Length: 248
Image (cartoon, rainbow, N blue to C red; front, side):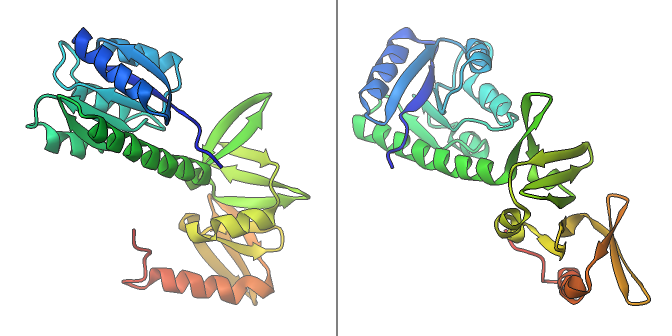
């Protein structure tokens, strides 16, 4: 399946450099739309109104610099990949500390810019995969919002649906519990009952009383079926041992 054409924003306070970079990007078959602006402040306004896949920008600009803009973008929930295009090489370390995907020196060569676009495509694919994995679209009152998987304490089956329980409330999603179990097991979600998944990082207590096992998650006491009790206790013991935490 072909990758959708990129929608990029070019930011440079020097009009000839801005026009040239926009022209070069527009020639790349992987780029579909090129937006331009001559200041970082204006770029922020554009980004509030437009969805872009990447930002190509100069560093030295009056007022808000390219590095300043990148710091602001890093606080976005889903920051676009950033490529710095500059005549100055002394800011490379700062750029990569801000997770820039590339640092291209002026004058810009076609092959070097093509490599930067390739890195953007690669970064975009990674970001999309992470977003698909970490964010769950839920509907509330006709409005779609996104819930982070890390917020989900436990999941309850409701027929072909699942109810996500978070600190801010519960949300019904049109996904079967078995599907979430398969997709989220690597994130620490385990089955404790035929109708319940719990997030192990949110388990506060495990209680045993006359052979009956329950767990406390977010102040809620949930029953663990006999079938899943031993597996759950083994998992929790393994997680508590030094050196058994998951490695990044």
